[in-house]
Length: 323
Image (cartoon, rainbow, N blue to C red; front, side, top):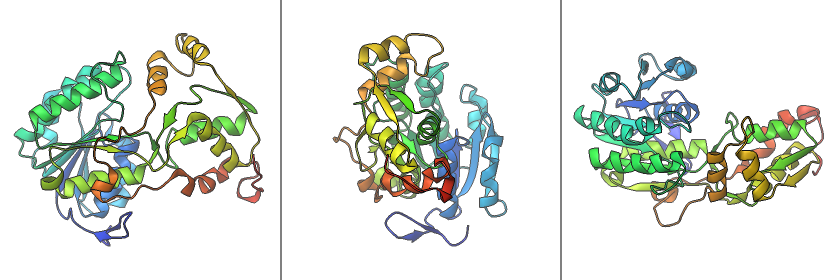
């Protein structure tokens, strides 16, 4: 990783050369993509989570001594403090849909930010989510909003990033629908008119790197990170089917039926997920976005045909028919 990185604007940069960056919750899907971006910019990484072994696949992408791993539990302050020792910058990626959400992404996020501040970290990014709402009855949305407030109270020059739903070839979003569509001829669609603004994960990772590289410009600000296209759930399913060359029947479930299913145990969607889906996942338009960070978002259509090859009837040897 010595040649630098080409960003979405066609530039090559090593603007994080030698800086130590701690990624809290960095072993997940988004964290590993951020790690690749930061390594290519010359950063030295400390990837920390409860299960850091999940990020070991990042190690071959780094030079000798460029990455280390730490076992950290954000509900245990002593492990968090150690993670920031000697770090120049940090990113908190911890989030969850279940469990003690206040400790994980609510007030607990403020304690993590305070630990970074006390350790002398100069650039701090807190990853939140589009759709945060302090008055929401949904624990996820409410605690995300409370977490933002707690972070900025503890670390006023932190940057808050609110990404939309992220997609990639190795995600659990597009690939989940792709697997279902390749298997079943008839599929129900929850919230068929619910709107999403999906964002390519590498564009989101570049946004994180941009904020870390220039904290003087981006510190204390909140950005909404969303893709260039607004799609409904029904449109998304239809696009995936078309890219697979499959003819599928999509049954648009009425809200009442979807809500009833979400209230039952063991179903594909729970009440909170249904409430979040109904609310949609698009940028509000009142906050700065990717363009203000120098990042040009790439649409799902740029990748979908290639990624769906493995889901076609005969793989790359099959014909792609219009669905």
